[in-house]
Image 1: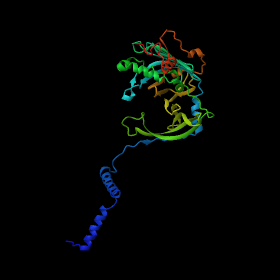
Image 2: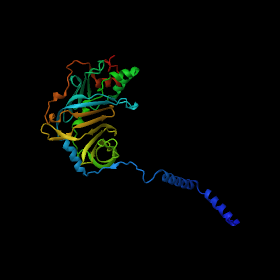
Image 3: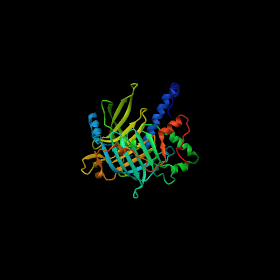
Image 4: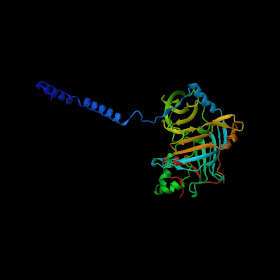
Length: 371
């Protein structure tokens, strides 16, 4: 048995007191480090496989290259096409519900600067659901089918760029006593406005005299839909270029007007466009599909599928060319092609007049929704 002297015992007790008299954060840190080391050593061995997103190889481009790619798509002045249209109503997104509607047939004619004529019809039987036009300043929407009640069949007239959300709130207040009935009867296309499609079909040209363009690069973790579901390579790190279009307010402050996303994998191609309001909120979020040949000659290479999300209006819509070879590009249309007339004598609703009356406390002669 080993015998300690009195001096050795005192020294030992002194060292023990020093150990416990260290600053709390130092001792706790040491304990945590040791504990973590023990835990990691015991739980993870070199043989354990950790799934990580694979970094995809990227291509390079200059700002001039990106601007050229956008402007190559802006050379088209008009498009006349038959398209599949799929609508998703996100009005109930806050409670985790998104109303999806079956794909409908549509005919779209768009012409610069901001003219559009859109018809949406029931597949097979060809009955029109909605007709819309915009001449760049005013829009008209004929709601021809609201699901059977006829309550919302009407002819709407309004001005592009005006916020009609107060009137939409009035609609929801009217139906608050029976929200299920409102949800059932309100047309799926009640929030659609023809001018929303202009940036989707005909991208506005870049203008370095009015705007400032800034290039940046990011890497985003994504789910690769092209890879098999059980593949360990499903998660990827995909590189993008961002091209921001900056505009100066009258007060001299800069704000972002548009942002273009370019996928850098397998070349550099436009994949997304975001349009912002003056407050920096997203007005339109547009996703572009793969490029393909349009028209009979196939001389135009444009996205064959586009998806538009309008967060404020709470809807998402997908457009797919039915017959790319039958698309007509470059034809000039007269102004009356973009002015819808109320030939069916539908109940007319002047949204500008309704908004004025509501803001000025005047009682409207005709209810926005008739009982």
